[in-house]
Image 1 (cartoon, one colour):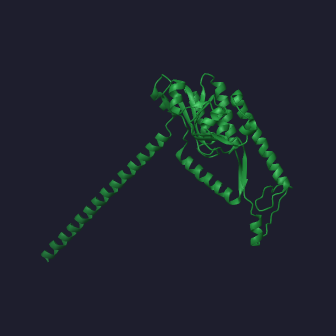
Image 2: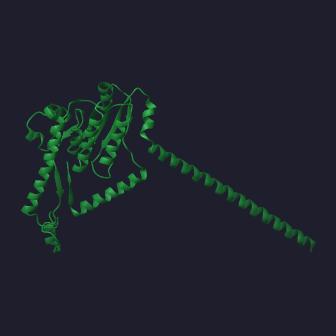
Length: 319
């Protein structure tokens, strides 16, 4: 009986030890995961803070001798894109407002895009140049500066290109698709009800009428004339050659663009900062925006583009 009691006591002691050991192991495991998640959170916060670092921090790091400010305009000019008026204008304003800025370079690589967004950027450049007359703005073209991209560039003091850059394409387009014959062959009947005689104008599932075509042509011509006026105002007497060719929608190489007066000289951003401005240090003022908002905007823009492509409802573009 006494031996049985000792055996039970030993069993209970062993059980307690095992439970304590398991609890210790579990606590260590929990602690390791806690440390891991804390490090992960710290890394995420650090990245976000670096992305949102204010531009004046970069400027102060350069010192008080002055620098050349850089703003990038990359991609299709459209709402919600990294080349939207909101993004580009924000960068331009911060660049001009910085006390150490000697000149601003707007580096452009864009095939064009929205007439409204292009016009908004163009007008803001003119406003900033008037407000800060001692700070010149130079447009520097990398690969492409066409249509809406050139609309923006025409507001600059000077335009610099590479010999192989593509410039020009001063025109407006509206695209879409027509599915009338396809629907007829498939035996599909279009049922469309509207209030307003021309509410369904340019409907891709209905025949294109002469009125539709003429109305669209008038709209495109009006936008084209606005584009032409902006280029004439910006380039002035530097434009050479026949205007019917310059404003036909054609595009040219950088060398040809200089010969036609669409650009001023050959030069990269580094060349302009060093040789033209005399401030080789370049500070990037391109507005990045909030990372989460950029992701949401990208998803929303992609969905809108997909929907537009599926319905055939093309938008007006300076391209």
